[in-house]
Length: 146
Image (cartoon, rainbow, N blue to C red; front, side, top):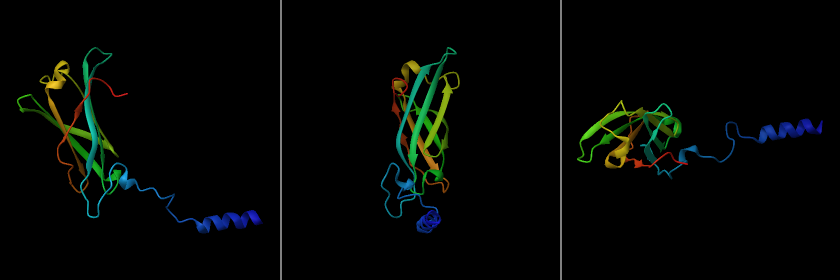
């Protein structure tokens, strides 16, 4: 009988829907009152020679939103030549805080893997209210992150 009262006491003492003092709204940033737009915490691009014998580029962006990761909707990425000419604008697929995209060299022949350091890449992420992070310069890596 005592075990039954203990279980009932624990159930009454628990606050419904609250596991602990975890705030998923502040995974990467400390948000101020009134903040609405998402922010990019980090982003990079790299290319690798694939086992199917062609180059594949990978874009990874980590973003956060003051309303939480579920408020991140989608993103875009852009590539620019060394003369700042726009070469590509395409989408980023976002799932929670992670936004990704990959493409084969044949998709965008103006971007050569061997010359990846000569380009500039940007990403921008949007939430469901169409707030934007603004353009964020992607870090160009020499290979896959470890």
